[in-house]
Amino acid sequence: MKKVNTIFVMILFVMAGCGGCKPSGTHSDDFITVDVTASYPKKELVLQDFMDVEYIPLETTDEFLCQGLVQDIGKDIIVARNRVQDGNIFIFDRKGKAIKKINRRGQGSEEYANITGIALDEDNGEIFVSDGYAKKIAVYDTDGNFKRSFKHKEGAWYTTVYNFDRENLICHDNSTQNKGQSFIVISKQDGSITKDIQIPFEEKKLPWLIAKANGMTYALAPSCNNPIVPYLDGWILVEPSADTLYRYFPDHTMMPFIVKTPPVRSLDPEIWLFIGTIVTDRYCFMAAVKKEGDAIKQTGLPTTNLMYDKQEKAIFKYAVYNDDYSTKEYTHMIFQPVNNEIATWSLEAHQLIESYGKGELKGKLKEIAAELDEDSNPVIMLIKLRNKNSQENMVQDQSFITVLNVTNLYINDRNNGIKVDATLETIDVSVTDSEMHGRPLLYNSTLGYKCQNFSGTDCGAVCQ
View 1 (cartoon, one colour):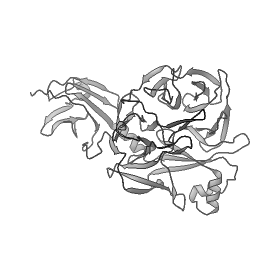
View 2 (cartoon, rainbow, N blue to C red):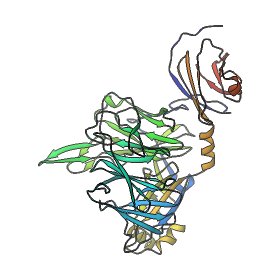
View 3 (cartoon, helix red, strand yellow):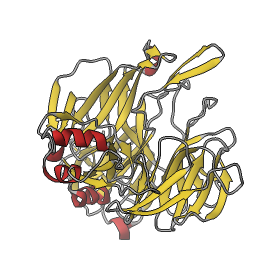
């Protein structure tokens, strides 16, 4: 049989039973390419046409005066805090009924001084509070009882914290002194490093403007900068120093999701690309932000909102409107990310009362606004993925193959966790584990080296 000596690098999706997984244009099954300097046509969408929307009025009492900054949502509870650093952490049920207020603010070993992020582990009944001042994570139960604490990695400042799995958290280091990697997976028990995530880039670039005047240092950062965005069975990691946004999976594998052009090092001023907190089975929302502005005056950072339409395989400027308003109420698609199913936005009571008075509201939102007064807590808007079951099936069926060269093939099947290493001596290859796979993963054909899925049927993906 013919030997193959060409060395190449290639990443491709293999969808079990798919009719064909071929790249096309600026989009392949692996990643989207976005030119941040290009001009794109505009498309208008109605939010309720592709997302499910739920409104939750947060109960207001003398003890529960909450600004509605949602930190996490579980099956049974909502965790929120205020935008001001008063130490209050509010627990509501999923209907918005007030359950518990926690405040452990202070300088003690069982307290926190400055909240930069909160993660809920509902299965273990724990709340993880990242303290930016003390550079530690304090762990409490959902009644506010202290359980343990551990320090941030030396020199790090965790401002974004999410559940990674039952034993670990995934964090983002937002320290201005950080010249290296920013993403890390740590133990929930003691903060020890489970995985230092390596994002390739040439030079560290911070996503903000900094200026000094009158002995003060001023910083201006884009509001759409969400470095970790939960997506399907993993996360999207946004490193402004890199030209690629990556998907990161629970098994610690990583693959490109969006590639930005031109390269970041070639742009002056720089243009950052951030991912929207909503990525559906059709739309991917993004924000291109130009590094221009005045940090002292807190103005600038012009932003272009972009959307990739997977069905049309094209990029657009977008405008999304909320159909619960009779007027064209624009909806910003860079929400507060909560988990891989839900993003949140808070609607201020006084604004809803004003819109209600003008007859601008419809449906459930109108009913809720009719019961509000000026002192009411905000109404939480939950933006939820539609067709959850079909998206879960897509994740379960999805496998990927990374070909490092023609003598080293690594297969990772996300359906059942099988991992197989195969050495390719020839074009026609069989995996040694015949009981599990049965047929060759690759076979010689007139179209090149074609992949077969684990059922033995041709998925149509051409690997050459």
